[in-house]
Amino acid sequence: MASFLEAVAPSLSPLGIETFTGIVSMNGFADRMSDDNDMFVFESTGRVVGVAELMGGQHVATLFVAPGWQGQGVGRALMQALLECARGEVVTVRASLSSVAAYDRYGFRVSGEVGEYLGLVYQPMERVPAEGKAD
Image (cartoon, rainbow, N blue to C red; front, side, top):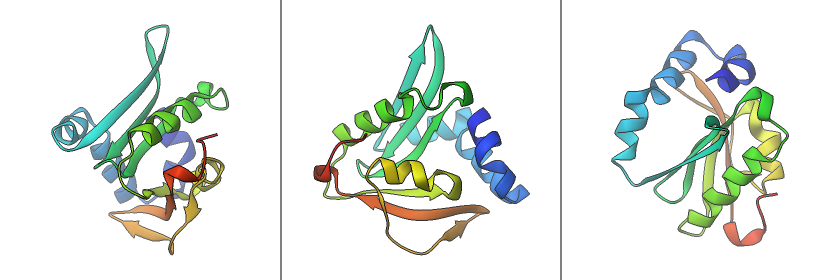
Protein backbone atom coordinates (compact mmCIF):
# COMPACT_ATOMS: atom_id res chain seq x y z
CA MET A 1 0.00 0.00 0.00
CA ALA A 2 2.90 2.36 0.75
CA SER A 3 4.21 1.94 -2.78
CA PHE A 4 0.75 2.65 -4.25
CA LEU A 5 0.23 5.72 -2.07
CA GLU A 6 3.63 7.11 -3.05
CA ALA A 7 3.72 6.34 -6.77
CA VAL A 8 0.16 5.94 -8.05
CA ALA A 9 -2.41 7.49 -5.73
CA PRO A 10 -1.41 11.13 -6.36
CA SER A 11 -2.53 10.78 -9.99
CA LEU A 12 -5.91 9.19 -9.20
CA SER A 13 -9.34 10.40 -8.18
CA PRO A 14 -10.78 9.46 -4.78
CA LEU A 15 -12.78 6.75 -6.60
CA GLY A 16 -9.57 5.23 -8.00
CA ILE A 17 -7.94 5.19 -4.58
CA GLU A 18 -11.05 3.60 -3.07
CA THR A 19 -11.15 0.97 -5.84
CA PHE A 20 -7.50 0.06 -5.37
CA THR A 21 -7.85 -0.09 -1.58
CA GLY A 22 -10.62 -2.66 -2.02
CA ILE A 23 -8.54 -4.70 -4.46
CA VAL A 24 -5.60 -5.00 -2.05
CA SER A 25 -7.65 -5.44 1.10
CA MET A 26 -7.47 -8.75 2.95
CA ASN A 27 -10.95 -9.61 1.67
CA GLY A 28 -9.97 -8.64 -1.87
CA PHE A 29 -6.93 -10.91 -1.84
CA ALA A 30 -8.86 -13.72 -0.15
CA ASP A 31 -11.59 -13.57 -2.81
CA ARG A 32 -9.05 -13.73 -5.63
CA MET A 33 -7.09 -16.57 -4.02
CA SER A 34 -10.07 -18.86 -4.62
CA ASP A 35 -9.86 -18.10 -8.36
CA ASP A 36 -7.24 -19.24 -10.86
CA ASN A 37 -4.64 -16.79 -9.53
CA ASP A 38 -1.03 -17.19 -8.49
CA MET A 39 0.20 -14.96 -5.65
CA PHE A 40 3.87 -14.16 -5.14
CA VAL A 41 5.52 -12.62 -2.09
CA PHE A 42 9.10 -11.44 -1.67
CA GLU A 43 10.26 -11.44 1.95
CA SER A 44 13.38 -10.16 3.64
CA THR A 45 14.05 -10.90 7.30
CA GLY A 46 10.41 -11.89 7.82
CA ARG A 47 9.01 -8.71 6.28
CA VAL A 48 7.01 -8.61 3.03
CA VAL A 49 8.77 -6.17 0.69
CA GLY A 50 7.10 -7.09 -2.59
CA VAL A 51 3.92 -8.72 -3.89
CA ALA A 52 2.65 -9.79 -7.29
CA GLU A 53 -0.41 -11.55 -8.66
CA LEU A 54 -0.94 -13.42 -11.92
CA MET A 55 -4.60 -13.93 -12.85
CA GLY A 56 -5.62 -16.86 -15.00
CA GLY A 57 -2.02 -17.57 -15.90
CA GLN A 58 -1.88 -14.58 -18.23
CA HIS A 59 -2.66 -11.22 -16.59
CA VAL A 60 -0.44 -9.35 -14.13
CA ALA A 61 -2.98 -7.97 -11.67
CA THR A 62 -0.54 -6.49 -9.16
CA LEU A 63 3.19 -5.92 -8.81
CA PHE A 64 4.32 -3.71 -5.96
CA VAL A 65 7.63 -3.26 -4.17
CA ALA A 66 8.00 -1.36 -0.90
CA PRO A 67 9.51 2.10 -1.50
CA GLY A 68 12.74 1.37 0.38
CA TRP A 69 13.30 -1.80 -1.63
CA GLN A 70 12.81 -0.48 -5.15
CA GLY A 71 15.82 -0.73 -7.46
CA GLN A 72 17.20 -3.76 -5.61
CA GLY A 73 15.93 -6.56 -7.84
CA VAL A 74 12.72 -7.37 -5.93
CA GLY A 75 10.42 -6.43 -8.81
CA ARG A 76 12.64 -8.28 -11.29
CA ALA A 77 12.53 -11.43 -9.12
CA LEU A 78 8.75 -11.22 -8.78
CA MET A 79 8.30 -10.68 -12.53
CA GLN A 80 10.56 -13.64 -13.30
CA ALA A 81 8.45 -15.85 -11.02
CA LEU A 82 5.27 -14.56 -12.68
CA LEU A 83 6.56 -15.26 -16.17
CA GLU A 84 7.69 -18.76 -15.20
CA CYS A 85 4.09 -19.54 -14.16
CA ALA A 86 2.48 -17.85 -17.17
CA ARG A 87 0.28 -19.94 -19.41
CA GLY A 88 -0.72 -18.94 -22.89
CA GLU A 89 0.98 -16.99 -25.61
CA VAL A 90 0.73 -13.46 -24.18
CA VAL A 91 0.94 -11.95 -20.69
CA THR A 92 -1.02 -8.73 -20.22
CA VAL A 93 -1.06 -5.93 -17.66
CA ARG A 94 -3.05 -2.76 -17.09
CA ALA A 95 -0.08 -0.71 -15.95
CA SER A 96 -0.52 2.42 -13.88
CA LEU A 97 0.88 5.32 -15.86
CA SER A 98 3.75 5.71 -13.40
CA SER A 99 4.80 2.07 -13.92
CA VAL A 100 4.85 1.95 -17.74
CA ALA A 101 8.64 2.43 -17.86
CA ALA A 102 9.18 -0.45 -15.42
CA TYR A 103 6.99 -2.80 -17.46
CA ASP A 104 8.82 -1.67 -20.59
CA ARG A 105 12.09 -2.79 -18.94
CA TYR A 106 10.44 -6.18 -18.26
CA GLY A 107 9.73 -6.59 -21.98
CA PHE A 108 6.11 -5.42 -22.10
CA ARG A 109 4.92 -3.22 -24.95
CA VAL A 110 2.00 -0.82 -25.18
CA SER A 111 -0.98 -2.64 -26.68
CA GLY A 112 -3.77 -0.07 -26.70
CA GLU A 113 -4.99 3.33 -25.60
CA VAL A 114 -4.92 4.56 -22.00
CA GLY A 115 -8.11 3.50 -20.23
CA GLU A 116 -9.93 3.93 -16.96
CA TYR A 117 -11.84 1.49 -14.77
CA LEU A 118 -13.59 2.69 -11.60
CA GLY A 119 -11.16 5.58 -11.31
CA LEU A 120 -8.03 3.52 -12.00
CA VAL A 121 -6.16 4.96 -14.99
CA TYR A 122 -4.06 2.39 -16.84
CA GLN A 123 -2.01 1.67 -19.94
CA PRO A 124 -2.70 -1.73 -21.55
CA MET A 125 0.53 -3.59 -22.21
CA GLU A 126 1.49 -7.11 -23.22
CA ARG A 127 4.48 -9.39 -23.42
CA VAL A 128 5.13 -12.64 -25.24
CA PRO A 129 6.89 -14.75 -22.55
CA ALA A 130 9.20 -16.43 -25.06
CA GLU A 131 10.60 -13.04 -26.16
CA GLY A 132 13.15 -12.78 -23.37
CA LYS A 133 13.90 -12.55 -19.71
CA ALA A 134 12.25 -10.40 -17.08
CA ASP A 135 15.28 -8.24 -16.63
